[in-house]
Image (cartoon, rainbow, N blue to C red; front, side, top):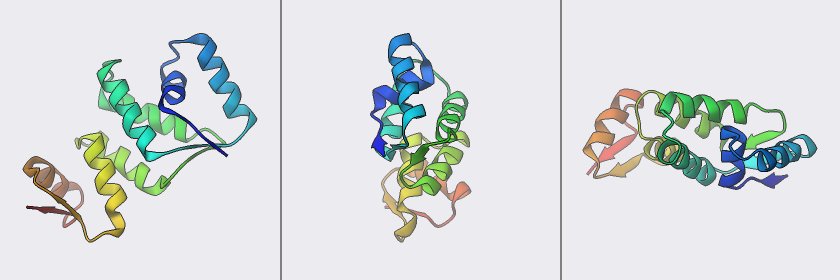
Length: 129
């Protein structure tokens, strides 16, 4: 299994460079791949910032990629939860941090906005400092 870099994920999702997209798709057809949480985090940032995509489109695109046979996500359950929370209004980075902290006692933050939003989605998981 090989891990994908952000530029490969973005090519697969945006298809803005035909040759690179073709090579990325060929890789997915040839062998299993894994997408790391850090790559998803950076991919969301690129798709939102550089490509001006909205959260619903980004969430749908990430789910579609992660649903391709042979594509796995590290911490898949947490990633799925983070995408859901992102679609429901949390910042993707915050959603990912919160979802990945599921085995911890919670996520401590000074971010009052995150604490309020997270309380609606996952009560008791964020500790506001």
